[in-house]
Length: 267
Ligand code: 13P
Image (tube, rainbow, N blue to C red; front, side):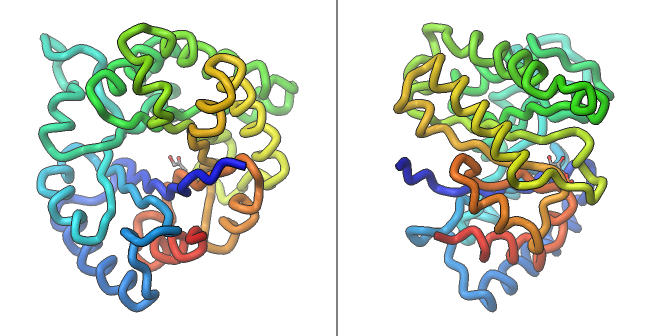
């Protein structure tokens, strides 16, 4: 069985000024030390924090001593141009970002982000050397109407098709991309998916990746669960064979709870 490094990615959403981020880092330094967690060590989970654009400046330097990677929560697919209010992959790299969340359900729902746009952004992220964390997931209504697999197939299908582009074959084969399954009804509601249900959908995601790119890519790509993940419930997800970690909103905002998630994710 593949031995994928676990990943605990925090999505700060529209929380934390630069000053609040600095306070968080100070606290994280202490909580990691008291929990005796060294993230650079073998067996530790890969820690990533995806901050608002405005908090990114200086963040990767500040988090480097802790071996925590930095990501953004969105980007535009063009290299540059007249796209008021948007930020490019190059700009994120310039700020030390290594990761970028793409297609979060809040972007899809409130900012009309389409499957095609998410797919295009994923290709550009890989071309530029960013690790995309691509989000997919169904709404409550879709789940109640037994549409979960169909929604996943559509959302992921657009991305997998785009990833067949010649320009990203090496990056795709290296497995340096991440999918996050986040059922919309579980986000910020305290109503997390059961671990069995999450495994079922994530197993489907892995099989679709395997169908498209073969066994070795299918086994290399990390797939996260997201939606009301807390220190109290993360172990049940990590016990599932295809779940490689979590994309965490609320519980990533406090150093103590983020540390507790990392503590439980060490192998
Ligand atoms: P919560 O962990 O707050 O439910 O948020 C999940 C999420 O949307 C992470 O991207």
